[in-house]
Amino acid sequence: MNPAYVLTLSCADRPGIVHAVSGFLLQHGGNIEEAAQYNDHDTGLFFMRVQFACANLSPDALRTALAEFAPSFGLRWTLHPLSEPVRTVLLVSKEGHCLNDLMFRWKSGLLRLDIRAIVSNHRDFYQLAASYNVPFHHIPVTAATKAQAEAKQLDIIRSEGADLVVLARYMQILSNDLCQALAGKAINIHHSFLPSFKGAKPYYQAHDRGVKLIGATAHYVTADLDEGPIIEQDVARVDHSLTVEDLTAIGRDTESQVLARAVKWHSEHRVLLNGHKTVVFK
Image 1: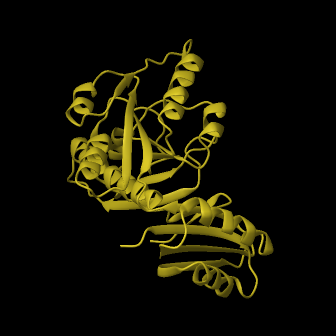
Image 2: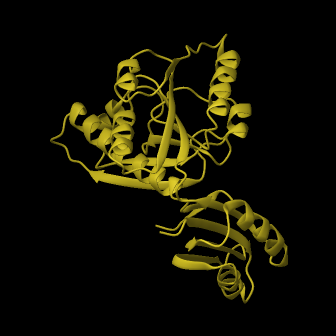
């Protein structure tokens, strides 16, 4: 089987981009297996994802050729060999539903990840990490030690060569500096009651107000709390007969599923940033 790659690109829209990209791949022995494109008429930008096989050139040779080809269209591009899973570090606090779900999907071969470490401000999940043979790092966080804790976290992320950081219910607000260091490669999950029900016990607040929809949002992390580019969302209908515990359980299931889809699409290089939005080639 020939080596497979994913090429993603964006540029100002103009005639001939698809023809040129297809011709470039043909010229270098590439066989297109999957392709998707999107023209954003509001911004005038063009986005494309191409999955192709190519036995003629190495990844480095392909990147060199792309670097020579890209300026003619002003392309911003990335090239990823599909044989290389995305190196990932997971952050978690005391709620483990998203962590458990991601670990199971990864070990089951459903996520193209290489989970290098789990980092937590609590010790609750060290045994779970050990059961998957994944290093566990306990880094307590207080107001006084936040800067030092984040420095340790970033050191682990960099030493593991992580290209993706997943906040799997990590209940600490990241500093602006850490958000900038992780720009475009950190995914967070939260319930979609925001901004209506802030703070502790949102499901109690929602139950008290008689909500009829429960939802979750997965997005890229930015310095604007819970306002980063959205990757995926979902909702579940509820009614007056359900208890707070019922709402919480449904909410956790929704969060787990939404986060798993966002991580899967990111790991398959299907998500392209478009300003404060995303383009997702499912």
